[in-house]
Length: 90
Image (tube, rainbow, N blue to C red; front, side, top):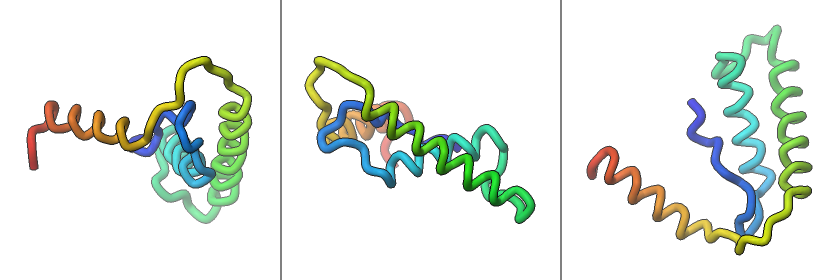
């Protein structure tokens, strides 16, 4: 359920608003147990996603590091290699 929650800090280029929103959505889905909320809970659900996205963006903008920014393509290849080792080829 939380596959979209990925490390978003210290990448070049920085995390997009879409990536942060996706991670926030997955977080709210996980803690509520809802994949899609009922009409009665939809407003609270969407508000929580938006608030968490805003706080996450603020956090990412505030964090500091001396490490070189990571490359998205390199990290994606590492993830594919780990998946192949773990699950084999499909």
